[in-house]
Image (cartoon, rainbow, N blue to C red):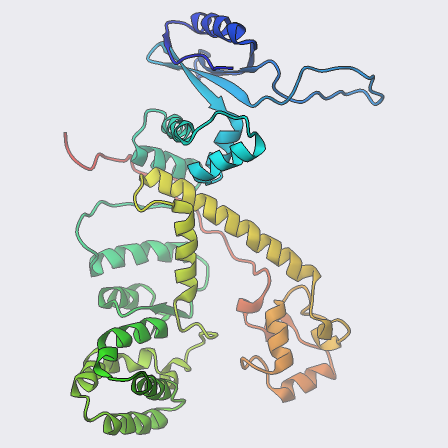
Length: 435
């Protein structure tokens, strides 16, 4: 059965009669499902659907054995008014829902064929449906205008400016200043881990004054490999060099670092290129990655940007393509954030009702069960991470047990954080280029 062809009508009555005439010839009937009016009471759009759509339900307690024609048909027809003319748009609820959920067109067509092998849909139909969905969401607006409207309606905090020049310190400064507004009433991070991007590092020193900026060890190793590996003839020599580098980086005190660094220089006197590279590029920033200095900051083991890289990879699985309109990017990122939030909420709920076996019958953990993360409880049990000394644990075990204040807020399952106010005075968006 075919849907009514796309056409333009002068009135909703003409559209409805024409659509009914066509669908009757195809063996099904269109009925009104819902209507929508504008602020002046004029009909703005109307949704029509197959008369066999929906599921039968009865309000009676004792249902009679009756028959129904409803088979939950997903077909819908959307009539929309634009410039005093009426247009037809065919909708398939299931395709729309799957598309909105972030599935790719090829995944959608595979799902359709698995559920209904007789379906005649092809990938082009899905791409067309996707384009129609995007067009309907824009509702005649530009993608940027639609994005601003969506952010405003969803109570997002946002700021924007236009700049087509490469990233520099001024750009980083603007972005970081915007980010600091998210910490209104919330403690700023103790440390911020970055790569060796000097413009970013300078901007951090201006905006996040109470946060220590550490350099990512993974990026350092990657850069060293790029610039030094070709200088070694064998794999064993290269591995020995990496071992010596790690030995220097993981020095626990400044005196230990000075001794190991001097030994390193003596070992590789025959590699002046490498020595000069390390002295010029990395040693001026040793306080940001050598353990003797980074251990002075409360970083909880966060010395690499792997979490950010993982989040970035997750976001890319939702984006699917390398390019896209800002509105589409916002929709997909919002979907990723929403799914991530639901996973976190589920994990928090699980942490509240589950606790390690060793903590079940111990008075030491009585005040922390369901309030402190199981990871932190296990670390206390293993006496690591420097949470409490053995003497403190013994003292508490004989008296009142661990309290919430004995743990850093980082380990609290659900911290009470104030919600930053939402900026409502948003300026009207202006075109990027003058006509």
